[in-house]
Image (cartoon, rainbow, N blue to C red):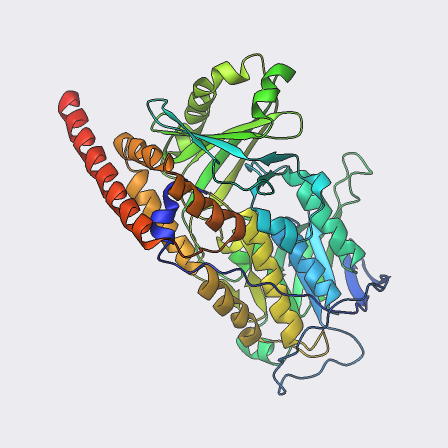
Length: 488
């Protein structure tokens, strides 16, 4: 979301592809429940009555048909990626299970979503806490630049609470026919390559809870057989470990929700703040984002995880006059991936969202990309299975990967470069904030962020921007050298 990203984004084509999910949901399945003895339970779920657009089917004719049931898929993780995937699968005729341990999960997330997500995912306005139309980018020397001058009257950045958004998407998946299980995924028995080719199911082990109805409940060990698995279980994905997806570098995000006096909350009514500087993070930024009746104050780092509380204190100090008198009502911390995993698909298992590593550097944006990847993966399964009538294979899931990489891979590479250029020192950050004052930068950046596509710029303005960028970096480099002399 950082403003100077336009310098690099102008060279990439970001295009949002919209897809419709499909029709009927048949939902009858058999699972095996394991405690001290083994029992068999038949679960029946209602069929969705909504009329939905028909999805064009491109399944391979050689895919074996499934007899007496529909394709059975488990989605592990109930965040935006899992919720979007489960809804799309259920609407597309797939027998769908969504397993999530914490149904009241409050991930430490800034909660910013682009305007296009509201429309693409048909989000009701009442789950959006704030519509941010103004931003302040604050440099290491506390020079503040106002951003948002180019926004049109209807444009805004949505601020949501993850526990509200996630719950809404899970409920919608359930209404579409998915079975939502309050459970902790433990492990998965992965068939051999030959067994996968022959259609052997994956055996999932999990502990099922009763949704908090029984205090102190230890849960019941259960198993379930499924034809395919979508891992949407976050940065510490157990599904990723089961398929040996490889490690990746990750950041630690730390956030405090602070209830501030009403008169101070007025200041943040439609305003968000971003702080940059070595004091708040050596490789990221600090933030103050408004929620319904409080603000979220946080920061993150990859390189100095052990100092995260020190950076959080510095962020609070930078914002102290505006949050004075506030009371911390919740403290949250969570890992955030810094780049996609080496492996995201194996056999009939695919990773989406944070589990796949879909969080952008520099801005740390992940909600939209999580939901989008979950939907795209589910669409590939629906298409490949002819609405649940045929078995899928790895080739079907790789269509999702190919589509995803073609659409969004340039964005990740560009923001990686941007972070390395502008977050490497305080002088570079000063140059970064200086660039954010340019209205052309603001317009191009907001267009890219809000709609996930880059519109062609004015060649003359692009040239001026390039010159100004070089000038800012030259000044930043000169300032860095002078500071190094003073420190000797």
